[in-house]
Length: 249
Image (cartoon, rainbow, N blue to C red; front, side, top):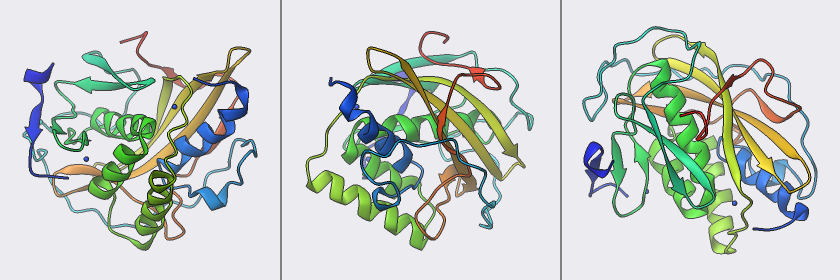
């Protein structure tokens, strides 16, 4: 697989019982811009109502910066077929030769460069989510793939605090499903569900990302308060989602 991914040398890139689950939820939700102070430690989430759509204006483009094709539709009714899953700590991240990530930074581990397609937007969102397995990786990914805004700086500030505090708490999680909420070519909103198994039950956490196509890649649009996409919280099962994860390919 290494031979299939370009290497970017120049650009800078959850073993414990139930009481750590709430910390994991916070970590996963911060991926898409929900800062720690918006969610008090120990408070369990509930499924959130959609928030207003972002108003960022994307920059149009075709091929990605690493040459991935832009051929594709505007819907996503099944999971991409050419996906391999690679362990990043206790979570597996997806890779598609056709849709990305086309670049993995050797020094930071940041996974970037995705196809200008719904599949590319899904891969970008899922890889951003899986970066939460490592606070430093998540910080560098946010720096590289976040659209410049006050909200991005708030999200980075929260992540810098996690890194400084040495917050490496982890619980095994697995990507379990997704749905494409919207796609208009240069904007996309993708919802991804992750499953957390604490030994007594499986908990499903859902979070969504607002993306814009900017300078040849999918980038994450943070709202001014540091929050991310329109959906975040806990769902009871995978009804309404397309099942997808390491066990499905």
